[in-house]
Length: 246
Image (cartoon, rainbow, N blue to C red; front, side):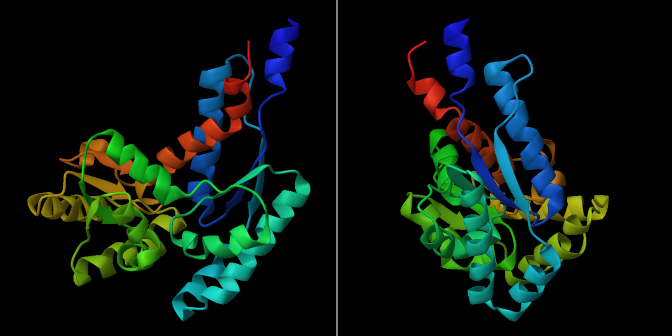
């Protein structure tokens, strides 16, 4: 009994910067808690602190390209989570990892980087050539792709017209809770086109895409960044328990 009580107390506290969008943050909360329950059983749930920001101003800043202001917003959120007792941080969005250095500089906490854990999951499957879907920022800018490349992966992205439509669907539909069959079919066709170019798998590199696209919608393996990131969060939360004698 004493050993079990000690194990119960060893879960770390993870701070989540969420709300971008709240629909995907809801998925994070469910997946992380399901992961903790699977590991610890009974009535266990995750030791989380969540700061859910207002996405509308951030979406406007993204359109304006004001990443300095977005970095300041994310850094402020990180500081609030650290002050509340977080021992590590997770940014519950792919695109906002563009300002991960601002978040890191604001605290001394470890950050679970979504691109790094996704790259590790892909390499674990033995794949090297991967398609990437996400916002235009994520698909085209180095802050995300370069981390995949540095991990030894070759990254394929859609053509410019497809990039624009994928981005539009994310902003105008998925982030507003709309999941249309026509958009699902479009994404599936884009994935097939990239598979025809040699992609061995596809990264759902926006945390909302996994709400629309499932494995059955793709002819190649799907890597849902929300699910992968959430699994890494569970590993972080249980790190002390797993390294302690039972």
